[in-house]
Image (cartoon, rainbow over all chains, first blue to last red; front, top):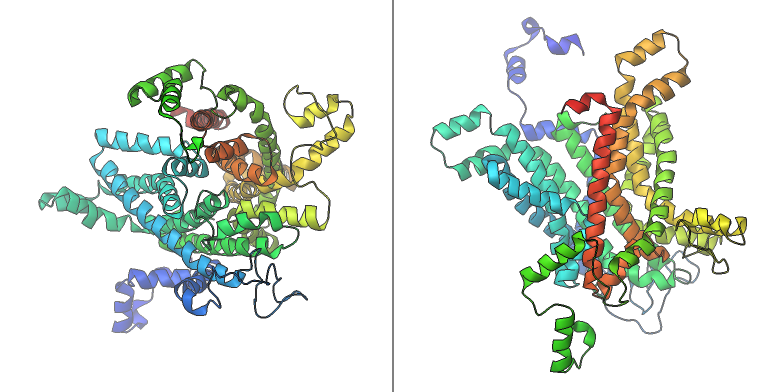
Length: 310
Length: 301
């Protein structure tokens, strides 16, 4: 550590400098300064912003309708292939649909899936975690044992079981994947609440006569936000990955929905004759998931120095 | 009931079926009888094959076990040395490259990765078979259920072993990729922590060789978190098995579960899920015991 940093020479500083030393930076600015230096996290952010833009403007930028069948244009390779055509930039699939358009619409679908999964699982998981951690006792035991049961099954298997009960389909796949993601959020929030609830600000709030629920949501929750934001980011990638896996197994979005996992499953018989049908949707999944994982790691480092990995 | 098709069944047949399957009794009674039977080791019979769920499970389990063990061996044999090297050469090009790659591996949709492996090694290069456990020309008697062992006792001996091994390569790489990424990262961070400890400094001061310091003093102490992570990876192996077995037509429990769900074979789904969950709980307990053995400080808690 630089000794100048520890003990600034006050005699040579003017008033403004001293004031600047005393007022801590706004947390958001402090966070951004730490985050900006992390190249990997910035790369993740760029990937996600790009995919989000594609998702939002999908109807405008996609050249064709994702479900239109072009007769006489079956399995045309992408433009870099000698047989490819610039009419269908990334080629067409086995029934003559434009793959680029399907991938673009698949992006909005995947982002929507990720967002729904995160909203559901973080919403429910946070409430359960707050209740479990704050009240303790029997409620805590019941909730946590239930979470243990959910965690005893691998995520995909549990999602498959839920889908097998509810029936296949995109909506049910989202519900299944959300249920699978709840326990990790609950555990995380409960852990933070247990640490926070003995703090003095909670005692102070109690002594003012503030209601329990108000203490939980207004006082404790904001102090648990850092790990929760990280978890939500990582939950996005898990949600997209698991929903795509369900689609691949034929239990998620049903054809002809342009969902990446479903597209992959459709492409399997054509792995020899039309390999681009296999590679392209998978690359999209990989990039989005990688983007969220990079961002999540960077957020963890910037938001929570305690968790910083060496 | 959905399996009876569009026309449905006549009311008599319907009631007969309900009675046979025990669906006419109240829900709690069905649950109780399922639980008592399960505790006696009877998980019921598959609706499709009429065989007991337990036999079906034990028929397929060795295939998954073999795939899982080879996949984990691949992940550990590659992941631990790579993580170690990355920790020793901290912040070098190798370290950064490896950490970048491991994040890619961690984000990998394995159902796509398996297809890409098939595309490269089977379709383009023609090196490995696309699906199954062993070439159809080999007849292997079932002894342990693990083909790598059983194949030696078959008539074709080494040839059969070679075929079984070739069939295992791609699925185990596909399945081992995520564990490989996790193990490499965990080894690196655990090793970095250990290398800062006083006993490493002491070992250096004693003039021990670099090799001894890293592989004997370092790795042994870094093993505890690695063992824990390997145990916790068990769940993701099952997830991997479900997807990998579907891609490679591997006749294990993962493919069995997916097939039963598509066929709505509920006794199989129930029994299979119960078996898998108990295995995971069992493995977690085993990890706790191993943990206490590797780290005496933990025994107090």
